[in-house]
Length: 352
Ligand code: NAD
Ligand code: UD1
Image (cartoon, rainbow, N blue to C red; front, side, top):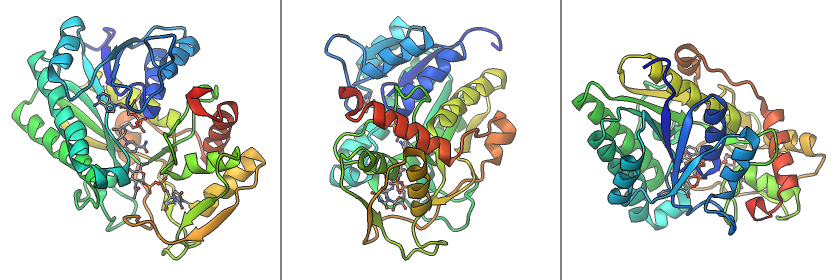
């Protein structure tokens, strides 16, 4: 199995993390089929493919097969597996807005949990045994200790979105116990930010951004007046929340490393791996780094804490370092410089 070219199914490959990962997979020589229902991606009217994948094809000079498919429809998934043979599935497709998940929990359980079960069922029908899952540091709930290590307790999530990530990990553990040929790597992402260094693909949130870096980016190009900092009375050095921000390209390469690891190892059951830098930065530190990268002032106002926020979160990344041979190569200045480049080139995202 070691030397053959793997054909990879990437669900949600038209999204932020998916599109960057598809680019790195193509560069590494994998063949890629993307499925996505485009609920959170932009489709050019002149093409059947989402715009980000047209750009990925141009940047890599390679081809991606794209199929418009909703993971909640198991028969459509069966059609995809009938037309293509896969060695591995990387599963990004999900709904991801924490606030929305409290208003529409059923939609979140349907797509994130039931949709994932559909994929696993169709994989089983087709004897596909390698799965890489987009999990999140949110599965650790309120950290009892920092840095966060993979064998710490999970669960205790405060919102439906977080619970879906935890529930799927539990499903995957049970599946691996029931079938010793199954290999799952659940990648627990910390805070992915930034954009590809070309400045041509990046994060393109719908409406008001929920997350810090895209919000700052929109302030920097004048789309929003100021940033609202959610609290400065946390138990952190400057009182603002601390997070482990990770450059999107480092994160994408983490997936290539995880697949390469699966390709060369015997079936290994369920394995959770943190993808973070191991270093936390406060909101004020991110603002200062972004101002340096962009030369723009980011006006801000301190407001109430956001419900559900924790004071600090950062990874112990030593499992990824040792087992996948993966380390991050980009720092906070790179994350800000690449976000700025993408935002400046594409103030309206892919709709430009
Ligand atoms: P994204 O919204 O940009 O990408 C998700 C993609 O899935 C979108 O292109 C969307 O159209 C597609 N999709 C949604 N529902 C679908 C369905 N029913 N059928 C088919 N396609 C569907 O999000 P992202 O930031 O790229 O996140 C990718 C994954 O990583 C998600 O599972 C998310 O929960 C997880 N994650 C993201 C972060 C983050 O900060 N971005 C952090 C931790 C984990
Ligand atoms: C949030 C989600 C988390 C999800 C992650 C995806 C919540 C409660 N948590 O995490 O479940 O996995 O996104 O990346 O939504 N901040 C501001 N002003 C803003 C935005 C953010 O001050 O406008 C602060 C936050 O309080 C936090 C830090 O910036 O201290 C980072 O916030 P964010 O980017 O939303 O990420 P998380 O809160 O880590």
